[in-house]
Image: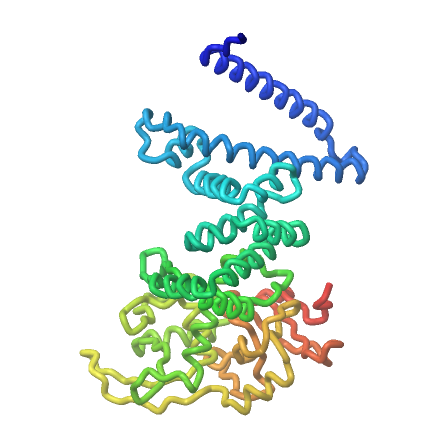
Length: 444
């Protein structure tokens, strides 16, 4: 009769096996390191083989790590180290941080709940990115949907899609499969998102902070709107993608405020009001007319918003260039004495004529569409006494309109339209340096 080995010997043997496997893995990594140390010296076939091998190895290691994570969580030995949760223990001991660990555990749970998918990740036929996309769907699904997704036929359908498409497309396909299995669950999830929605807009010393959570449909509409207001950047546009999205959000807000259909419920539609004293008005006009900046400019009260927030000079210049102005005369105590009639500098008919001629932003290489652009006076309306005419107008997106005023740029037309039918303009600094040449090929 054969005696079973004592448990302690089994543990010792398994520990020895783990040490040997890790040593073998470390040796393989060292060998790969020496081979891939100079990837530029490898041929394209060898590089692609390496990339494919790396992808399979990462997938296998991800699946195996998930199995070990779940076993460690089930064993519970992590509780003796003072951590409130398994995820907190793992985040501390791995130094990966809370969010990556949550992703690791969520993927491990999904691979365990859908074992055929887990096997496909382990053998490298499905990527960890596909597993992550599926894990987000599974984590947000009701228990009955999770059970339906774990059915063998549902797993085979998921794997069939995963092997054909990229991870993003697979995530959407998995969501559609889950919605098909539980149509009411989709609506429940959406209503839960709607109930959790919020938006915070807070003025701080360093700017206005925005944070919030939208339901997926509202988020989709916002993303499309931001993309519509964020065209392909021009060559000189050094903004980050985050800055461009922030500018697009500002353009959307400005578009709403200038839309005649927008109503505040009062007698006039909402608009941004700038408050300034007579001395400030005179000083701004003098500064704009000056050919050279004075060494010591007089101190004047800043222009403010309704709530007293100071307005940057470049914003004042842009507003004075192209806005509706309402005259409000106040006495020494600030009491309104007279309110003049609001008048638009460019009428709708004039704007349509400028759009028909310029087609889009006049800055070379900028593809901002006309509906997101503003009409700028080539000869500034305030500084140069430029007329409000189609001839004196140029279409500029919000970003380049800001740049023109910030850098005091001069604009001239560069002759006939380009091959796309768009008018060409040259932008020059006060020193005469060409900043943007309309003759440059927009597509280059």
